[in-house]
Length: 430
Image (cartoon, rainbow, N blue to C red):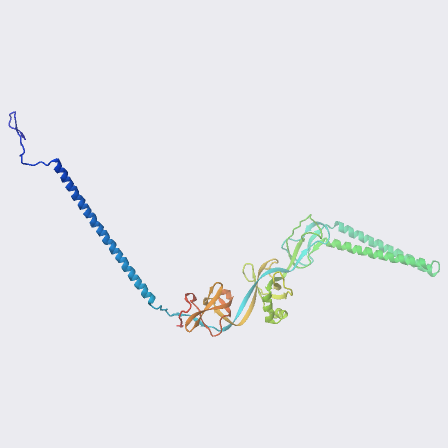
């Protein structure tokens, strides 16, 4: 159909276009069949695409599997080649040393207790109240110096009573002497009997005995009075003062008034085992020779410093303590500067000289389960040998007791890199 507007006239021109009869319009059945064919073609194309993707994936998997198999074959061949090839040990150069003997001075250390030459506990000899402390703790005192004063009043009274008794006894003796002399004259004139004479003589003897008794009591009273002044029995240093003025003291006190330590020379006590004592005795021949010929010893203080003056062993106990299996020794050290204090502790260092011994450096040894080994060079190869050693010089050197002999060659350095049977080429000094 065609519609139009022409000119100014008010009319429309309309033409209808009718299709030709021979042009075919698809029916509903045809349309359904056409859609089915189209769906089938698309499904076929999708299946074909999936099949192509599947074959591509399968091809990739096959390639990877082949690559794995090839790598496995290559590795197996490589391992087989490595296993069949002989191991070649590189021949490295090592510092070696030839065993010989030398002399060394060892230091044996023993725990020690330091005591004053005299540690005197001061107890009062009389009972009474402390009236004065004449010293301070830590003060240096001389022999005879007064340390404490106990109440003297009762003892002064006792002394005066004793003195009065002595005077009375002396008067009694004088009276008895006069009586006896008179009786003696009368007996000579035969005025009295012999009995009266002897009786007067016995009275004189009794008076003299009473005088002696009174004099003894006077001495005792004077001593008791002197004991009220507690004096130092020796030169030394005052210890602690547990009792103060006003304390009632007596000879049965649980603690001493103080302790005076004679620190001019200090005694240092230490112990040796029975085996060490036997070795010491065999080395010198006897204990007396050991005490006379042993070198001076050193004392290491509690702060690890070494005491500047050397000491000497004076005594060795003749009895072994059955509970510890040790024997006690005593050494003496001078203490002019007062550095050592009674009650302190330290270590005694005793030098021991060993002659013709085998010494190896610590670097030439290694330890396995608390056993020490060295590598001895035998026919150009390293051979591990166990050795019995004694550590010296702070552990930097070992004295070999057994396991090596003079003339043996051992590896001196780098033993941590060695293994049993390793070829050893001695290092040459350039």
